[in-house]
Image (tube, rainbow, N blue to C red; front, side):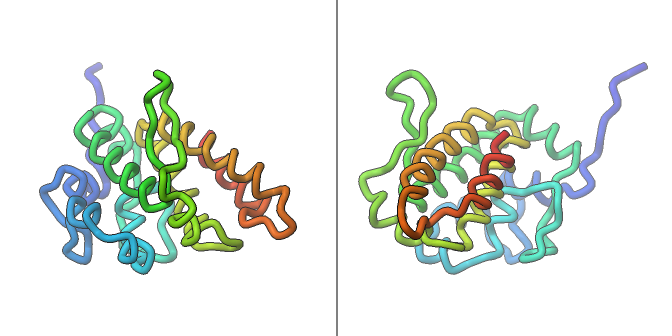
Length: 183
């Protein structure tokens, strides 16, 4: 028996990540990655394209969803994973983090502007907590498990610090979602 080839149910995502097509609002991946932080914060229908999941989004029900063929394509094609990594790096910068390889192990560290950038997301019941869950899960599904693990470790450190506060910015339930998404 020959190997079975799967045709993606929704190839829009592969075309978007390949740079040959735009999302359903006419925006390219490269264009979104150039957005200023304010636009990333105030726009709510791009994150489902940057970090797709196998479940339909209630915020953007027209966004593509992952299937086995799309997941396999990302895992097989380095250029798709590199573009996903570029989206991850942009979102890290948005949250005030940076990727650090200086010790030889992949880590996510607080950037010099962390205090400023974290004001936009490190607050109770912030919508960015849901975005972070999506990012962690999507990275893991699409072949960037080390990046997801490094991001989760950085978030876990912040959660430990925050949980000692009288009014922590990250709830125990949010942290459980992050933990589940990253593993």
